[in-house]
Image 1 (spheres, rainbow, N blue to C red):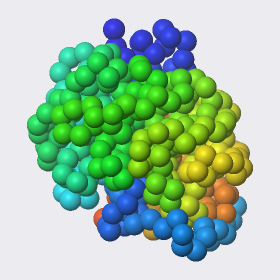
Image 2 (image 1 turned 120 degrees about the horizontal axis):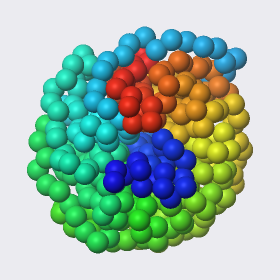
Image 3 (image 1 turned 90 degrees about the horizontal axis):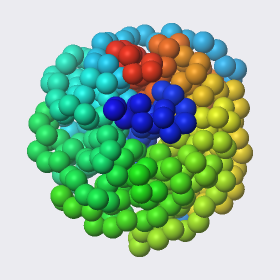
Length: 358
């Protein structure tokens, strides 16, 4: 039985919770190469917690529809991608095709990395410490692949990795943090081992690093809240209620806040990485799934899985653009090399398109 089928048998929503998103994701972290976001994208310079306050009101205006300027074909079921700033490669986990495809900046296929039968490649994240890309395999009991360039060099397995979903790099501890759906916890990976586990809420979906507070923020889909984990000691600092069925999360360095996509509430909750708030909700979405920050425009992008669109939110908290992208947009990645935003069209596991917003 595929990961998708198992999730649907559990009574969770169809296309997204079959194994849940990642990226993001999406998470923005710290490095000197520019700003990025989503379950896992590239890592960047972030504001110091003691520096000047958040940048607000930088962008505004009314929502208007724009077209995605480019697209390219991938394998079936693309989900949460990651950008590698060293090779300038885009890694796309493809759950239905059971492979991870690698594309260059010209959107041309560099490699197709097979993951084997009965696997579900879900979410990718870049590790700036070793320049590897990590991809979660959500097929129970789960594993994490370690990729160097275009080759899998290691497969991390452990009883503590049970249906891993979102993944991100934690620069505070130099470890990879994995939202572990099967164990209701976050597993921390170093080398080939799980070095620590922190229990969170029920159904952890995605995890992002907040450099402003040096916290990891975890979305808990089944308890409708997020958990803040102190990056110094990996203890829980607190929990905060958000909307119904929180999925993707990303840090916005322009506002020094975290943005949470609430699938069933059809909104995005803005919170502080100190687990105080929430600071407000942004409405106008249709089954929002993943979120990612766009450096060149200082906008937060949100995929609308139920609306066949992707929205851009300004630092002022307004939807300023809406892009038509396929029928079931899921994951996001941003490249600070091309300033492009990549949107995967999962479309119930049969989608084969990635859209490029320039």
